[in-house]
Image: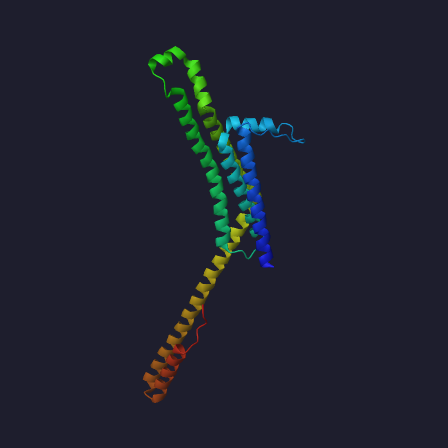
Length: 249
């Protein structure tokens, strides 16, 4: 049964990777004008792809990749939270992965912002001097900056920021209650364990205290009578305290 489950998971993973790779190739070919996509139920898909190309360029690929990884781990985390016996470390690790994909989504926007700004500055100001800049005028230089990638820089900043915050909101709505309940239950179990340990320690100390009290009483009685019976009672009391089988923690 487990082998069949692993086989199905591997097959799904392979199909998903193939579909993603195909989509990336189609997107790249569409960017180069080699492929035009037409879908009957989505007639404006080519306009959308043109918008994505003009505003996001190649950043669309890592954005899509990390968003899908985020969805995958988010759904897996929701699934394992339904099992009350799931180890705490497994839940925290899966939540950590979800947070990592969100942070990387932000990071893609920041990285492509820097790439776009660098390309815009190199294209707009790279081969200019004071004389050529004055002759071309501000509008021409601004046009070169836009064509060089400043629009890409601004668009990826907005897309990465808005998308990252929406992913955080989605995590809070989808898993907020389940995560809080799971962590509270884990904290309650730990508190009960600590309280149980403290109660056992208190019980052990109480038994030791009674044993010592009996030994002292026996010693006093033996001293008053001056006989052997008091000494024997003392030894028996001490032996009783030493030989007590304390319950294990």
